[in-house]
Length: 136
Image 1 (tube, rainbow, N blue to C red):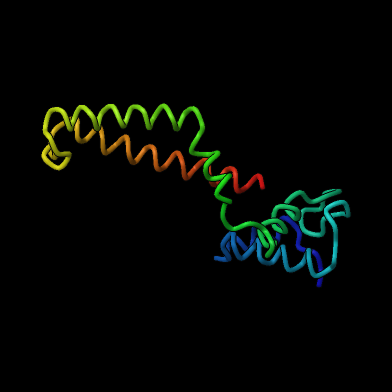
Image 2: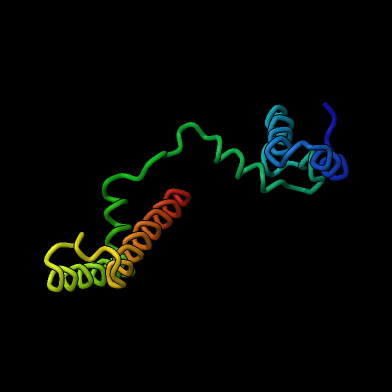
């Protein structure tokens, strides 16, 4: 199979082959030759191809799919997360003091703040877990 030039790659992308198809073509070409990232890249015509390492890592079947319990606990013990948890707990205590039950505060501004803070906390935890999983 002949190497694909950058012009051919752009042509394939413009003809409806999406980025995923181009990456698939690239990985099939690159890995079928048994090349290493230190050898010349047949697709991008550079002296090395950093994308090959990334693609190989993404396709590694032995990579960890989830964090261990200790790693997940490490993410949740971060200073930023603990500050948000403390703020959420203060809002919860204030809602309980004012309304007695959290559901009674539905529609109030403080309840909306409580909900937004909970969603923010979850999204930050998930983002930090994904970042840690990429490093591993």
